[in-house]
Image (tube, rainbow, N blue to C red; front, side, top):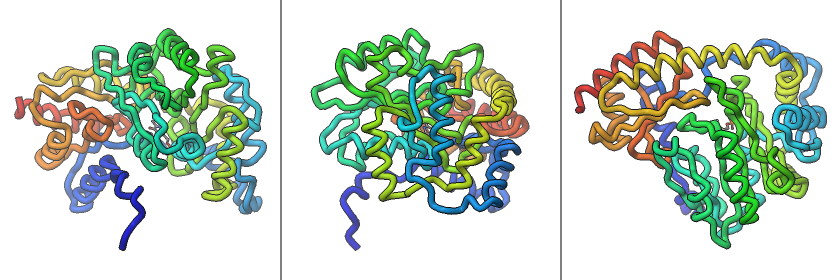
Length: 388
Ligand SMILES: *Cc1c(COP(=O)(O)O)cnc(C)c1O
């Protein structure tokens, strides 16, 4: 059968391939330590689950408006105003099937064949694939540990051409966990305004911060940057709601309206009763966020210390998300070789950096219990020592 050409241009997810191999080993009864999770290991907080169950019981089981339940759009606009200093109304917000879908909607709405999208590497692996799917061109800008894996204003400026439409900013970052400082965000905003391009700020990890790091939303820095900003966010990471598929895109009405039209002909509304869970997540106490954050903070400290005690691995200390992204180049292995050998010889699953455009690194997730963390680090230590 001849499939559409666009299919052959998109790469299947390497993240999923490693996870599948690790799962197959587990199914055979092999004791695998997995640091591959891209999601929190906690259950969704009980009050959020109860709100969705109640909505289900009450018959909130019908089609709703494609752009989302009006109450939820309003609550999100309120959150963006009070939390992030962004002056949005409900009409500036569309509820989507996860943060991934909000980015996809945006790219479909905005990017024509040949348009350029600037993406700093290491990047979240779906960004360039989404751009490819619509015929756009990803301009990948390499960054390294010397700048904390963050793009500099000079690098951004250099990458801009007359074809540049959009810059994708992700802070805190997956896969590096790094957080841009307010000064760094300010400097990037100036380049964006001067060049008159758009920016989408993927803020899915905004609540998962450590050591007093501050999250600042680029659109809050003034009128000029605000009008050129899109916000992509969701409930998955902060509230441990990955399987719910609940996210949102916020920005200029023209873009949100167009995204609603696209969504109206593709997925329609997000699961109606699930949206009531999200509404409760926003409107009730935020203590659950802090509990999960503190658990992550402890694990981060342990994993970071263990990692830096391994000769040959180097890793800056990230201030956000739940990942560490060490440089493995001293082992002489490329990231995929490293990950396959580690999984086969020592039963530890990690994600190869090549999936994120950084072949000298691996991504370790500490969204796992402390016992697994200690055991897996023992094994990783042994493996790396055997290589160098
Ligand atoms: C997890 C993640 C998302 C979105 O996840 P959803 O489950 O679709 O809400 C977006 N961006 C990054 C960088 C992520 O890691």
